[in-house]
Amino acid sequence: MLQNEVATMQFIKEHCSLPVPEIFAYESDEDNPVRTAYILMELLPGSVAMDAAGGYDTHRGVIPKEHRQNFYRSVAKCHVQMTSLRMPKIGTIVRNSEGGYECGPIPGIGGPFDTATAFFEAWADSVKFKWDKETITRMMQGAPIPAEQMVASIENFPSQIKAMASRLSSCNEGPFPLDHDDFLHSNIMVDEDTFDVTGIIDWEGAYTVPHELIGFPEFLSCMPASFDLPQNYDQDGQPVEEFVRERWRERGEYIEMVKSAELQDSLLSACLSSKRNQAIAYCYGAYTSVGKLGLYDQVILEIEREE
Picture: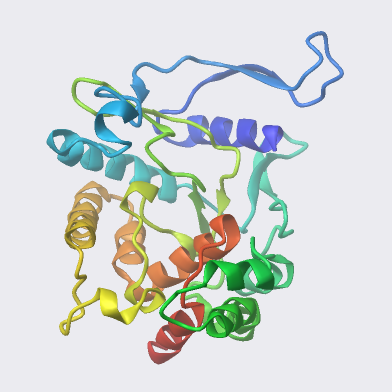
């Protein structure tokens, strides 16, 4: 993993102006004088956005409203650069024997993969949900839907994805864009006065992905309506909670900022604008990383309706 992170940052440094630390030295093997793996890298200016403007105690981890527009605009420019970095296959960034770059296997999934179909099939075969049936049942006590329905929705999701793997992606073959798997404001450094991005860190889990897995930065994450309980939306399909309505508005504004920053093509804005793509991206992260309970079966139905 450390070698992948180093290779990814070096790849970025060589191919665009995305602000990542320069690597001075590293050791991936513990058999060295300091007896541990390490990376010696550049100290970037600024603070992580999570800690800026008074930190968590002041704004509870939320970007202050007076800084959001500039922060979002600066992040959008970085996001465009990130997804403009593409490789022929889906996988982690690794160094080859000639000193260049190629794709390597993704931990827990395998690869590298020549097609999005092969990736989704491998993911479906390898993924394990965080919670077992008994734990899910306990978590669902007092919930508005039966625990059995939730368990079935979760257990069936990988096989449903595998069954439609060949139809999931609009771009089955490469090149595939680079994605930061934890694109959150705790990994984005900013100037504390302006909230302009000064650096992006923690590239350990980055890899190239199918277009359908390109999502919003985590601070703009929002579950698809089909994944959520119906009572959380009004008759027009709008969120009942003001917080969610604001998040929807901010996502729309972010897409416009991305469009303004795009030069090479409109891949990122197209991915973010696609309701179908964002449903797939959200469910992939929710299932793989956090074990989030939700109506995965309803998302599958939504995807099928839009085919």
